[in-house]
Length: 111
Length: 114
Image (cartoon, rainbow over the protein chains, first blue to last red):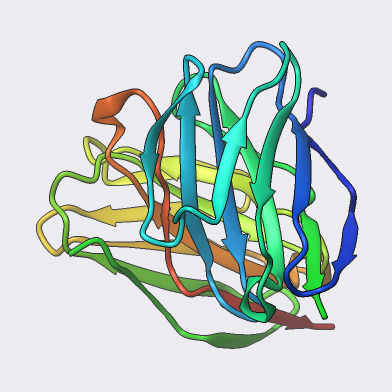
């Protein structure tokens, strides 16, 4: 069964550093998303991406964040100048129509 | 108005019992209501979903009941099993834009005791 894959599964970074989280969406999907889940809290929408551009972003998704689809398969989330409060699980998701499928997540720990 | 309120926060059910999780929303533009199941350290997995043109949808032991006038929907897990122990999230979205910005509830941690 096709699935969304994310790498790495766990990333530890120093405060102020830049991180890139990677995702391979399901191959025939058209819409791509990043969500965030702070430990023990609900899943929060960050950004949606379609046709090589951002279709919507949340208030959380400020200038510190950027997304890119560098080739036909990868979808990346870049976080610049990481802060302690960026520590969370980051989930990539993709959809072809309305059903969204999530990856296993990347646990980002900022120290 | 974008919020989805979910209750209870946690739920303990005996094996074989019925688990019921409730959600309520305000935004009448929402037209798709999925439920996701999440095990520790894993991503949310789509469990079952409903559109507001039906009042109930059943898939195996899982049933969504939808009350459009009350703007409420609920997940019923029949014959609950220990393997159902997980966190359940309701969500809602307006699918008008083609993409799917999900608004999640706060989650319900379900424990099914043998």
